Amino acid sequence: MDLQSRKIAFVQEFLKIQNEDLVAYLEKTLDESKKIFIKSNLQPMSIEEFNNRIDQSMKNSQDEKLTEMNILFEEIQKWS
Image: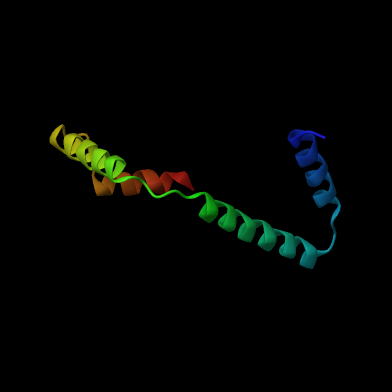
């Protein structure tokens, strides 16, 4: 069974669940598993990449390619 079929089958089974405790358990398990997966796949950036990011940020600042904090905050408010 391919990944897409497995996901559909999982969702179908999940939708059949009537027990709120089981749903809460599965939500918690999914959240914890995602955190572990993300944490285990994080890679520290190299010094070269770090310096490149700093250089790009400095260039953006000099070229005035910045977003002011109040404008960013207004944009974030629109997200929800």
